[in-house]
Length: 151
Image (cartoon, rainbow, N blue to C red; front, side, top):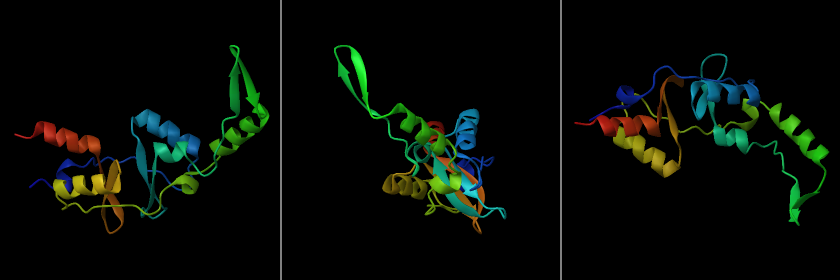
């Protein structure tokens, strides 16, 4: 039976709670990832942040409502207010937007357990931990790759 340590990505990009949302977004784009574990100064797992967290953060920037009228767009609400909300949102930190109730697995969890947890909890990535320290991460892509390479 395949275990978590056999399919996990070992070189895990991590963030800390003080990292800005903007820097987290840059890291996601650079590494081609959709999320990352958040660790404290001692390397302990304290949260996880995803692209969705960055988009749907607590510091919400609400797009101005508009009406399309005769091929023209009329904004209902000031664009200035929207611009200020965007500036404030970009200044948010990972600690403000991360999920703190992190679902994790150990290195000896079976691939079946991992897949079931992901489906039940509706999550795309699962940190693999030992003593609350990151050992790796498993994404849906890891599972699909494992299925694809099965003999």
